[in-house]
Image (tube, rainbow, N blue to C red; front, side, top):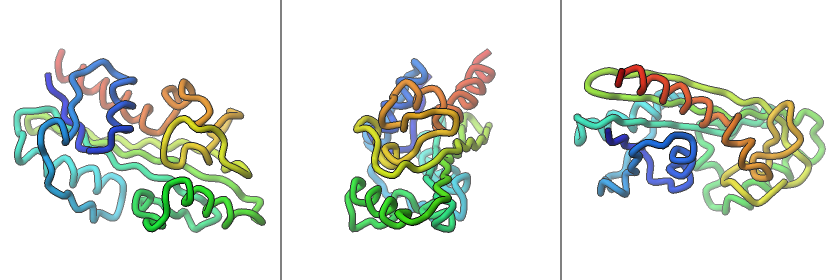
Length: 190
């Protein structure tokens, strides 16, 4: 069964393929180049918007949409659902450096990664949302991963997601959500 991931982000597609040996295809793989406006007020709403946009053109495929973000408690939970567009004039490395600069005199360095996922298949939908709690180090840690991974150390660990890829595959917000989605895919197939 073909599983369409409602994303053009190659990093996300790699993560999905590493976590589950399914027939995953991206929007690029299926030639979907229409812009999907993510104007929801929550991660879940944005994930639903993506799924609905793809579902109209590919009603017979299993579709997974996700929306995720990074929230910093001391920054009033920013960037949150705007993580991808946060400080959009800066590179990702510069965004990370800017966040560290904003926190330079702050002792509360708590942060979260959140991922909402929606699965749609033949009129059936399933939703999940997972949160991973952690802290922000004083400087970027590691060069693996992408996005905010170098500035997030999950609670109970001493390495960032960018330092330990196996850790990220085990406890990241996307990994936790995808495991629940895959369990539901298996339920639908049985």
